[in-house]
Amino acid sequence: MLGDKPGWGLKVRVWVERDGKKVLGPGRVELLGHIESLHSISAAAKKMNMSYRRAWTLVRDMNTAAGEPLVEVTTGGAGGGGAALTARGKEAVALYQRLVARLTRTATEEATRSA
Image (cartoon, rainbow, N blue to C red; front, side, top):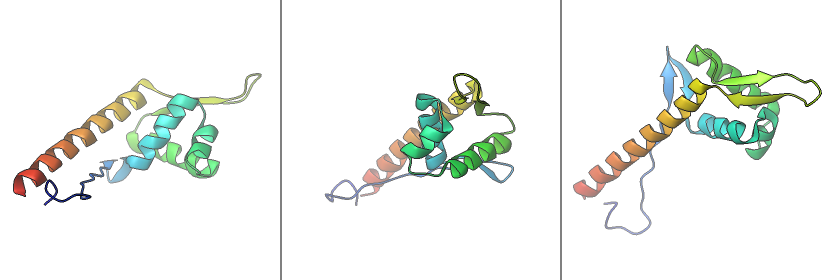
């Protein structure tokens, strides 16, 4: 079905939960990626057309659900505040991206084989 019909494709969406609470999903991983590159929750939120409050809430919820910080935040001072992924946050994003890529490959192979 997918392999022989132009315009058809397959998209896999994955959410990672801990004790029934969402830790990672497509939007959260995108937010983490922007935080990593921009070193700012505010700038990451703007990049995603998201309110700062929503981004902060997502960061807080991810940190809580993960049981350890995925994002570290530093407050004000002369240079202003900032945000960065922790080692665990970087690891979580990398694992999530590998998992999604692998699941997408497997699903595409299966869909092509079934066609």
